Image: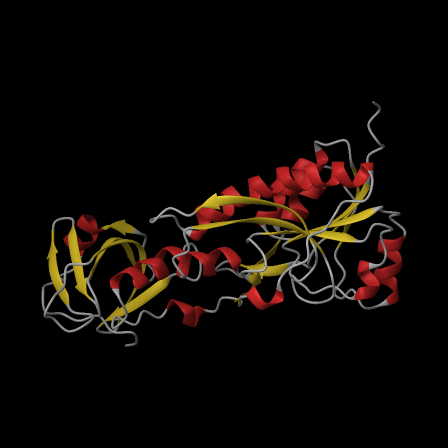
Length: 318
């Protein structure tokens, strides 16, 4: 049996999550004829304009890169049409695509989405799944349609979420799993039509874009929920709390169902490797944290440089 010819692919993506998929298509029998990515934006403390991960990898591979400010003007649309792609692959591109864009490749566009759809449609599916304490997540390869993450599903793969996994670890693993699944899906599409499973919209949930305010810790919540918040917001925007007027970034934690009579937010232990805070239900143990403007440190090192004692109280705001 002779394999069907490979497909010509236009790739739309921007952040690090999309790079393994780009690499996987590059290593496959399919041809990337061009990459569309977001315009350069200031990043980091110095707010210097730097290449996004997908752009940097595409340039290294010698691929044509398009960075239109908008995909609504005729020049951008004509540039994508000129690539002559059979199919579009979308991986964390960062913008909703119009039907005009979706119709350019003859086979339409497919997306690598980091959730088990229809749950966690939207911009931050891994973070929200971890914050919600989900036991598993996954990747769905789906048809891109005008409605947000609502297209037919072509393939899925699952990944367990461990009780201490961070969203960073989840995204890293899912980007690799999704890359492999995407190439398998391209191989199937090259051979002919692929059956798509419709999503049950009644089961849909939405993973709204993260903001810095998502990091505010409400100590009246259960310790387990705060632990999930801390790991779900790692590496950005991070959970945080104030001790007096000092803002502390909470990086790693554990939790216990052991109760305390102290008010939520009150330090109940602060010695050696043990920094525990009372919550609305159970106690939270911080294992790594960072004073704003300083480097991250384990608790023993942090306590050696900061005078914390039982009875002091963390607050959501200064």
